[in-house]
Amino acid sequence: MDLSPSAHVDTFTRDNLPPPDQWPTMTCTLPELRYPRRLNCAEELLDRTVERFGPGRPCLIGQDESWTYGDLLGRANQVARVLVEDLGVVPGNRVLLRGPNNPWLVACWLGVIKAGAVAVSVLPVLRSGELAEIAEKARISHALCDSRFVEDLVKAEVDGLKIVGYGGKDDADLIARCAAKPADFAAVPTAADDVCMIAFTSGTTGKPKGCLHFHRDVLAIADTFSAHVLRPRPDDVFAGSPPLSFTFGLGGLVVFPLRAGASTVLVERGSPQLLLAAMAEHRVSVLFTAPTAYRAMLADLSGAAPPAIPALRRCVSAGEHLNARTWQAWRDATGVEIIDGIGSTEMLHIFISSADADIRAGSTGRVVPGYEARVVDEAGDPVPAGRPGLLAVRGPTGCRYLADDRQRDYVRGGWNFTGDVYVHDEDGYYWYQSRADDLIISAGYNIAAVEVEEAVLRFPGVAEAAVIGVPDPDRGQIVKAFVVLRAGVPATEATALALQEFVKAQIAPYKYPRAVAFLDALPYTPTGKLQRYKLRAEVS
Image (cartoon, rainbow, N blue to C red; front, top):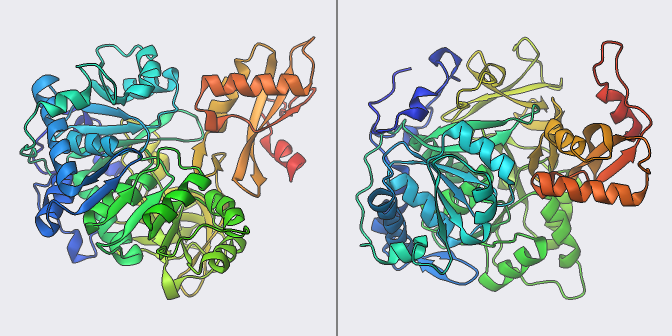
């Protein structure tokens, strides 16, 4: 793989890219995807947009403050100065970002990248053990963390980690430091194929996988799905529920609106009710959320006094399958047709989707311009239309795991295998069937069964445990734990509740088992392998 000379002083990410023969085939079928060899995506998204539209344009609307594009540019530059001048960050260092969706988190992400460093965004609800694992894998040297969420990061006890909080009251707070800095900064002239972010996901083993994405990748998702399917306008107001640590949220709430010169309402707690209130108050026109939230909002929209959301014109759904019933109910309630899509952390954002007249309810859509997709058998050979198979995709973005042997599983013959089973039809539409592995997708969150099992097994009263995903009308799937208790522990509702609270304290709360069943024994093969299919049969 012919890479440009790197601007990174710390070469960790380039040193830990997969071997060239394990890379997916990277395609460039659109002229707008031919980027210059030197490129800093934060500079392109922010500085160039300010040049086009001016600094006074509305940009970020937070819970307590609203910023113009000029405000964001100045604060991102100040963050970059603090990183370089005060903390000694050099290009290529990994900087962990932790906090809820608000303007300062966006400024931190842009500031890290303008400084030539690598942004590693994580959910604020992750616990110390999960944070320590990510920090070790990515060799994190610095962290910018919302002051309300510093405690677990400190408890992670990451050797040498320099933590700076923001939103606190002491003089060492990032916001106070930024106020003392000039608001200009010359972005590091990184290579277009320098890594600018590591997005972590969990596979079926429960071990986090770091997905390495280049500066050009960040622009590519805006210049493919956003430009050709979503088609935002400069006067659009974006909003949504996904955290910025999810690539679905990063694209929909930061990258796409900045590329278009639009503004974004950032909701720290993206509950359906709070999201609806923000949509009504700020005249949101573009919404990003999961099918679970669309279903939850329908109840309010069909009430006696539904909230007024007259500006809404674009709704995007991803993270789990959007069924035709939800699509139709939303259209009936709002008049807006949801743009469904499938993306992945490995691909950075959506690569199959359709809008407007191209939408077919229940279908994920057609291939986004700039990408290619096909449905194949286990050998990688294409299957005829109408026959289920594995979804394989390639385009301007693709899977590059950070020093991980699982690269060979995701990328085969130059194609990215997403782990989804699809059917395609003669008209080029793709229809979701199921997941091909044991990954549980609940309300848009990817949850590894093994990770939850390990947490359940740490509960003092548990002897054995197995976890699966079971269908749920609101969340798509929920986590269900089948548990064998130790002798003398009662199989009661109180025990189940205590187990659930214990798991919430061990791992991110969204992963806990919402259903618990007590068994006398788990089903095993004679060789000691768990027979998950028998557990699934019990709930089918």
